[in-house]
Image (tube, rainbow, N blue to C red; front, side, top):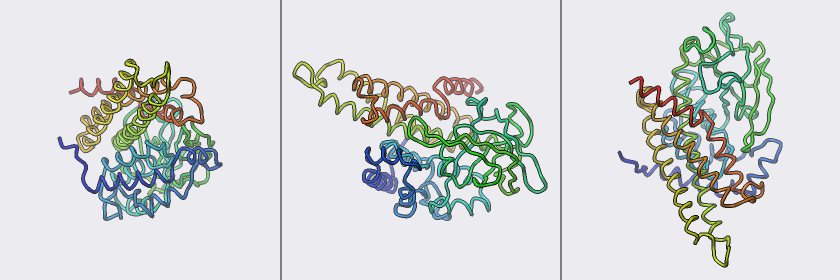
Length: 379
């Protein structure tokens, strides 16, 4: 299988890397996180209007670059290297992915707004009782004339404080964890009856608890067929999981790079600790984890177009490997640095927090081992 990037993909990576190096250094990021908004909206606009990066996975007919999952992975890896808090995952990968899959008038209207930087989408799917079961949904959307009325509670909705739209999973039928009866809606974030409780996450992002209290939404807010939304939800979550794996590749690469530099600078017994054989072995083990995670992520990305079972199995393989890499590389980076490795003033501590969050985002290692086993035994 050919893992060589095209000239256009290399251009996307190089352009984005240069831009982020100028706008997202560690001190600027810390100041950004400490601000009331938790981000700099000008960066999002620059990604849209100056670089055209928000159009990377969209068709040229919509004004994009004609890419797909691999372009998303490239962008997410570069963002991981600087721990960017931009809502690319939520808006472009998840929201844009759902709209691309469904197509039609809604996609034609919203995707150009995403590309232009005018639309930010937050994915409201997780619920307190749900764990990693995408079908365990209590939020309801009941028919009301030509529209629906939403009621329910969504947890840890990343980017919700900044969102113009919410992508919401809700039950239009069934109950409990039944696969049938789930639907997906694109909802105006300012609709009456939506209540948010915003907060910063441990890794520097912003999220919300979102409550829907008799929220009236129009019929055209429905994406896809009513009650048959779970396969689409599973697809976009798989796409998001692979994108997060790509982000983790950037994060773990920087953890390894920063730790290697530290061992070359820190001296004990009159020599750099990088000369100690046990630490040389550790650096090699960390490097191998990073490289294996990259390979697994690329493989899963290339399988996004396969049938559902093969796609899900590849995603679970990659996420399990990436989760283990995040834990191994992150913990060894902190251990090698000692106490300063978890201080707010040192970048390593921030990368460690993000790596730790990625371990469980869209499913823990154990969850994906279990899913992979169920999928492969089913064959």
